[in-house]
Length: 330
Image 1 (cartoon, rainbow, N blue to C red):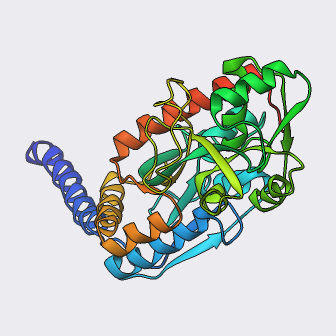
Image 2: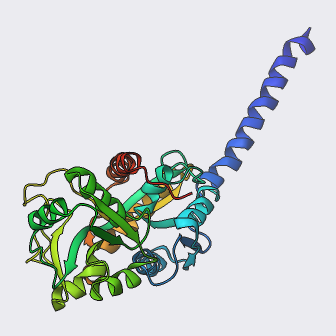
Image 3: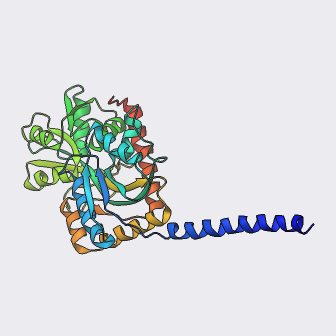
């Protein structure tokens, strides 16, 4: 009888001991410091662009604050889908991050088979900076304002084209937003990057163009291109003589290119919080803000929740333009 009475206690003691051992093992694992090895920031574009520049700035700052080397890994191709898709499938441990532009929010609608779901596969960390797009014309173009450009295109249907740095880029989508909003007969001419597009504009081959502010700013300042408006609510301090679409009375025409930092969706919240805190601290330094300003990016540095809302709004805005414009890439 004693044996029968004690048996459940022995079983319970063994079970409780197992729990104690499991907790003893789990606690050190949960308390492991981050990071304990080098980190990688994937950039889905070739070196030299805005995403690459920002990734290298952030990598240098995180290397100092985290005490681990942070390397930049450029994975260009397929309109940024290769690099973004790579990070979507990476281990969610905080050691692989993504720095990407607004292509992140455009591609899920633009491509029929984008290799990621922006909201399901990623956690947003922060938007580092953003810059509106701009509509500009050759210096000899007769249009001196947005209104004059609209009136000219309407008066000569079928005779006007506009350029962009590539199909599916946010400048292209801003051009389509413009075309759709004012019901213009305006044909899109895509180029393979801002460089060839600018040469075409300067050569007066396609004298109307949409591009990011960093792309057009040097030529606008030099007077070889005429900036008609930036696609924002307010004008930029970088180009105080170029009005915004908002102040001209054209509401709902906002469209920018952001640069943000992302992590795979299952990355633990404490790691996201640590990365966010270090990135925001870095953004308060004058040298980082100066470097962002130098590439015509307005510093943002929002919370993960705010950035998530920004991403959702961007997906909705550009998705609407893509669908109404019948834009397809693949």
